[in-house]
Length: 136
Image (tube, rainbow, N blue to C red):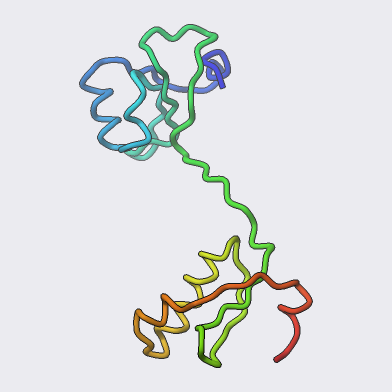
């Protein structure tokens, strides 16, 4: 996105050092690399924030949207059978990856009062949707 794409939005350009530092402090690590910002404030908080490198807002200068932060997440379209090694216990969970499946299984395991060593022995294997839907 470029500065020219922000013209129709009701944004305020921030380039003074004190205000820039406040925005950086408020937004944290994501905002550290930017020198100026375009902001829109609603209800006392930032509704939209775009960061820009440099302090002169040329129309062809690149800006990056920081607020609202849009995190791209993959859908949960994979299935895993998760079990504690050398145990009969296992659960089936939908997850994005094996690590997420292990973490979901850990919730079940900790509810059964198993200890942390059991977490280290968890194995997640991907299964098909049909296997996931089958009754055990």
